[in-house]
Length: 358
Image (cartoon, rainbow, N blue to C red; front, side, top):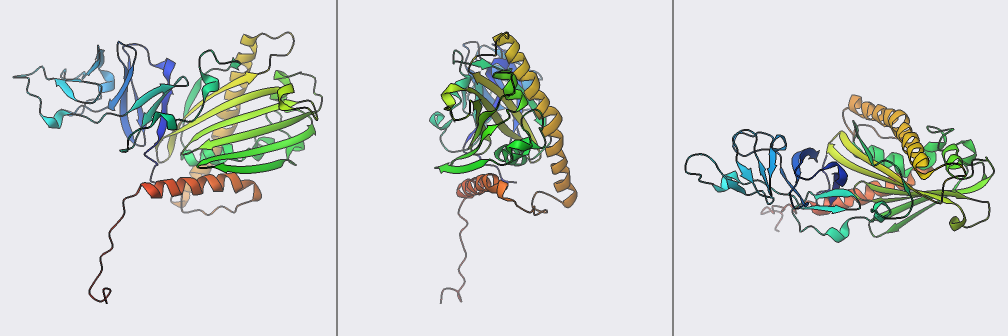
């Protein structure tokens, strides 16, 4: 598999990396040590000492440097070896490591994996997760899932599955007949499902009026390549506008660890107060618990089972699924991603023989 490299990937929630702490994450098959320097900023370098290949993530942060736990070499935030405590202390260029641009934004740490200049302005908008933003925020959660990250993106871009896989929690049969719109804005894709005058999904009913009365409901999934998704979903009284109802903005950040394993960062923000008798804290806990259940106990087993089917057949390209109308969104995203990856590949010169030259 070829990954899109000149883009930003979420490595972790920013709050998980304390001052003076180092942690390891693997992105696109590359082990990376992320450390928060004593001035509060974050650096990311290869998690492999150039001397004996010890994992630097087992070392310690010394001010603005990361010390190898094996022989004490120290590396600056740009990957340069700056301290060799042995012998004459000579530092050869071969000791230097790769560094990765890292940006702390929207309560996440974003790492740039490519060789082109990193543009922080290309990070997708997740400002609803910023500290101080309005709404009730669920737990900022994450898990490792044994799947090709593209399968999870397919799952999220086809929200018709909630009426079956998540029946009784996020959907039901009455939502099958929905209006579907698909729009593209440059490389950003939007897939929107709208149902009118229907029974509310159980989770939305709990967070809205908790009375089971009919609602209009919508779910707009935004996809930014390669795996950044935001689901703007909600319910409102039939015929009313969205501003008269309750909205949940779900964040789904998919980061490939390797070809068949990914990190899945999730969080949600509810806009529109809790039903009478419930506090924000109670609602946030309930939202976190039910969303975690949906992903951990329903989505995850299903998508991992799909991955096993591909594995048995010999890989992602060995099976040719029969597409349905509900697959229009995932197929468009796949085409955009394939084009962006192809654009990154170097041009291969074509040899022209004597006969070809005419």
